Amino acid sequence: MKEKIHPEYKEAIITCACGEVIHTRSTKQNLRVEICSKCHPFFTGKQKFVDSAGRVEKFLKKYKKEEKKEDKKEEKK
Image (tube, rainbow, N blue to C red; front, top):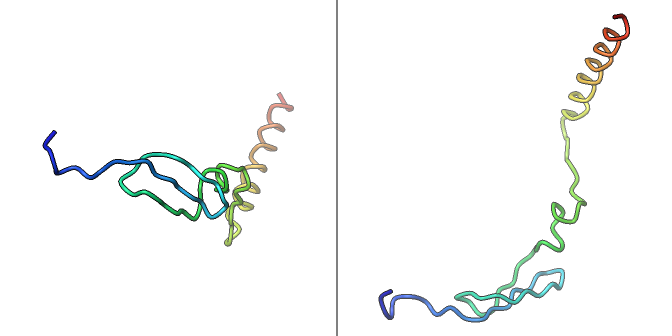
């Protein structure tokens, strides 16, 4: 590695808006983030699907009918 061209890599503290504190290493000493893995909806399981046009209901309605048709065909045999 060439000398005097790389930034200094030092201990860093990452602070989330929810209060979570993470100790790591970075070129910046203190970082503040709005969301972390402790409070992100995807990781906590609280994620909600937004369906403004009714696409999910349309999909479920369409494929529930096909399942019923397949069940009836199997019963007839």
